[in-house]
Length: 425
Ligand code: AMP
Ligand code: GLY
Image (tube, rainbow, N blue to C red; front, side, top):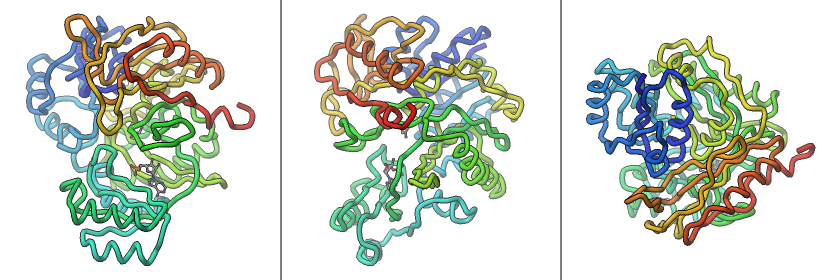
């Protein structure tokens, strides 16, 4: 069986790596892939990104199933296109992907269906937005409505920052169309967790829990990034909280989408804020898996992912039970010099240790050129360690990371600190 994975990041490397473990796999194509997928003998890179070209390839090569990693092709309608051509693909349609591609859509949806989230208002007029901030004061959060590659959210601790964000998005148009409308919302306090499920339109299959680290520096200091590390499971998501999140957020979301006539298929990721009392609110929806959450989650998945994907596109996820490695998996991202503002490319990468039962390294911004592995993007690698405790997984990851070198590498020393700090960890 031939499978196509769309994307080039660590998330896609991890998905392709896992799918390729299935005995029924003949070939896993990754489009466009990266240096790591190029080096893996079971994977083949495909230099295509255009949805129409991918669909043509899938038709010609009799691809049994396509899995989409990133949000951009989903929001552009790659799933609609494949389905129109009778090709099997796992992901949300363009309409369903609005849960991520429009914050205004997501907030209105949550309000309509009683899903817990921060109070908000939505503006395209800057004077009205400034007045709202004057009325509510800081801390307050300003979000560009559209996809802005992680640059669209300003958590303003001072009112001036919120006003500046409005000027940047609505007046100076610095985020283009993505910032032509903004959502201003109540600041929420607490601890974040990533809650990711697979949805076939009706049935919901939760994946293992996870938590990521968004800030660039140790102790959660410095600028926001796509994520500098993640681990699974996330001990903050107790079985009781898991049940509540399913009941209060995930099930109403999947049922609400179906009721609104836009059934959701694909990975659904709810970014949660959990307060001290253990109440969870939805910060955002993503219509895809998280990166880097996917890397530790895939490292723990024991079930054949190809089989799960087949059930997902057939609408029979209710028959699937997932089996997980009981160990903790913890992934540390190594990023390029200059990340996140202006990542440097072209540094030589050496020393990546071979995969073992305790450690696997997934590539993101890497390229294989003339047999040499070079940096080619912001987040370069995600080194995943597995161990019987968070601490042991962390040690495995950092022991492996210590062997890897490229000039200017940036990584956090404290991935997993929240889980380690918890009583009983
Ligand atoms: P989002 O893309 O909406 O998840 O926002 C990115 C990050 O901004 C989140 O992971 C949070 O760290 C932070 N954030 C978003 N919304 C809020 C909020 N209402 N209150 C506090 N922090 C927030
Ligand atoms: N790690 C956060 C995200 O994928 O959006």
